[in-house]
Length: 391
Figure (cartoon, one colour):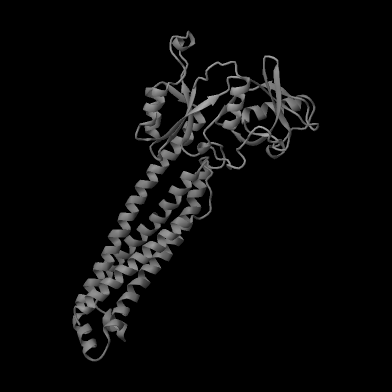
């Protein structure tokens, strides 16, 4: 009876418009947040380098080949790039200036040895556990990250030798070694593969190993910085690309494609998310205004109920529960629509070659709960203010 009395003077069309707007806003809000997170996670864990990170070097031109133009980076050049607003961090990639050989040392695989080109990268850019990426003289083995090309070459060599090819997991169990040599001094150090990368063409070693080799086996030749590692800000990769073009720098095409993809999709999703937030806020305000209008139309009924003994809290609770229930239904239906839309979009991404994680993100769910709680609070304050004004 109380419900019929309080909610009889409703404008159903205005309510339906507000409900439909809220539904669209909620659906696209949770969808955009979910895919913004998934796009930023794309490629994470599949490569050693962290997200939005590339290794660049100067393009080789005729003047560079003739030695008329330096192909290494000066401290001033690195500093200028680092100070750009869309750059998060820049670090030099240090290369060996001493002789080193890399080979197998295991009875299960045939002997294999080659001159090695080793580099070291600041650990903050590496997606590898810190306790794995450490070494000091006297340790059992040196941890190394192997370029995928070298692993393919090793498998090709084994196949040509009539041996069974090895998998990624198995190669991490094979005993390998470094041979360092200078003048009449030679040292053999055990090493073990702990990861692979498609982004770096050299064997990566801990910085402590590079320093050890430089101090004990270098002929004193200064280390030139021919490559630098750049970490760009999210959704600003286009600016990084323009900077590389302006300065005559280049990177591996695969790195550029992933960075460009994440930047474009991330920007698009941000735009959709912004529109969704505005839609949710506007539709929520329309619902609140609808509540105020409904209470205004029922002012006489509210005053009459309070005069005959109804406590204001009971009437406030009626309006509060009514509108919170409406928004709860909107939230639940919007989440269901998101799940269906997600199923379709996951298939679109997969068919386009972007294999992102398909699990639900907790952040998107928490966003829905936060929006619901925010609307519930606004509803309670509005209902309390409107009823007490008639008290």
